[in-house]
Length: 384
Image 1 (cartoon, rainbow, N blue to C red):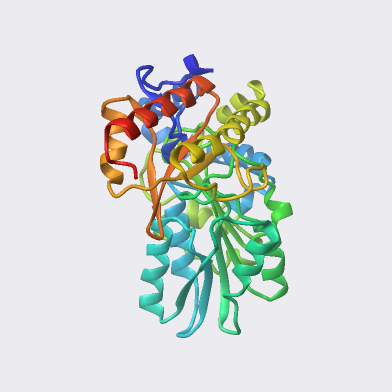
Image 2: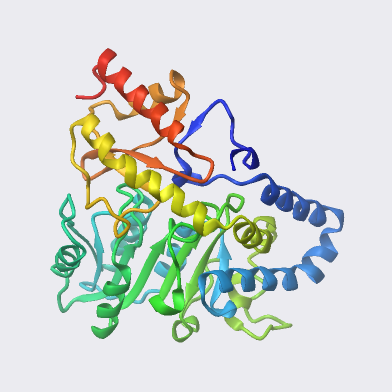
């Protein structure tokens, strides 16, 4: 698969999780739509674009299992969560229950909202290493009380790469009458996603990570009963439209001024690419690489896996605890000397070497990283 991607062949790329990587056929489709826009901008935007966007939403909805009129495109999950945040009507003392494994931009979004509203953002601690799904769920709900109004959590943690039991948490949250918001940035194209079965109130995910779309393609799903309560983040021509479509929700949110929609328009090509290349099997091979090598790196670094080494908690990423006081220097050395792109993530004062595997990766890439780590251990003080 490697020749299909545009990545620098001189770099061992083990960081698909950060921004994804786009295969050449999908990128060519992206450029096609950019050229179509530039050939006749007026006709393209005013006449062709609405139907093309509907086709893209339908392709996405079929892939993630929801109604096409319940989802719209956004540049990234941060935009999606900001839209939800601006429409929550919480009172001083109300609480948003989350975990201490959330993405930093999301923590900042909720901290901003709470300073404005007087609500409280609760980062419920999750013990590491995780012992079992049942124990994790038990710890999460220790943060619940009568003031809890919203549950917010990531389905796959960016820093720790752990898969969270979102279905079980959403089910109980709904029994308690709580609003459920799921950050699934790392989910589509990575692990199975059936939004209808999961049944959250809000769900955001990316296409530009594991679905391989061009950068800046993500979505926000909103359950029908909440759609009339969600105002657009940017008010534009879709608001009180003079020529409304069948969905006011889509009218309000889909068109927010002049912007390049080309990344969104690649969605049918993205789904075709995944189907034509039997991506379920490709993903499974990448997951096997993670399961086979996770403990190996923990042993090398004299640390402990963050969870049982199984598909219940791990997909195509794993985060290896690393004892370092110089995480930036370590990451830069891995890139500058060894030509390896791999992040050092940070969460709650701990550092992790996060390894991502995609179809263009092989055991040889993993071995290259191992040799580099051994050399760093033998020749520097960057890892204790």
